[in-house]
Amino acid sequence: MKIAILGAMPEEITPLLATFGEYSSEEYAKNTFYFAKCGKHDLVIAYSKIGKVNSTLTATVMIEKYGCETLLFTGVAGSLDPNLHIGEMLYATATAQHDLDITAFGHPYGYVPGINVFEETDAKLNALAEAVAAKNGVKLVKGIIASGDQFVCDAERKAWIKDTFKASAVEMEGASVGQVCALLGVPYFLLRAISDEAGGGAEFDFDKFVASSAEVSAKFVRDMIERL
Image (tube, rainbow, N blue to C red; front, side, top):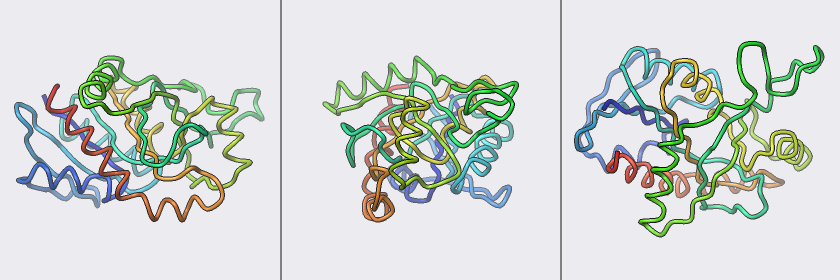
């Protein structure tokens, strides 16, 4: 199987490249795509750069140009759940775009004609993640992840996203990649380790914990690939 492994930032794929050891790379669309093997699988690894446009482009290239059949997105997010703390992990059951707003026309937040407010992730990949977590004794929770082109560190905005989308975490890329995968018929798994708690001072927590949280998420995705 050809598997896409996506991150948004270098910190989110560097641990994976280190564990795979040997890899080649190619420049395309002003980005770098890395090619490695893990057992019987061919891997295409990239970081998209931050934001929904960048992640949409990168995911599409991985599927359409490089022929990836499954996409695993590893990285970090800010917690919207008071019981979900820095370093802990969750996977998305569904994603939504919290900054998509045509409510002036009577539609709900996160909706435009032709797409769903919530795009579900792949049930089989989610079940595999549950099995990997159980085998390794890892705490793994599930929930909705909301994405938007803003770093959320305002308590009022955090509460609004949580209430409007029933979301457990917030970040800047997952929902756009979810939409790409849904439209192109590619199974999608989204894993996030918590790097901050999306409140006052979140930017300081993010700078401090992004690398360690990303490493936790990347190791888990590596374990998943070995069992696919």
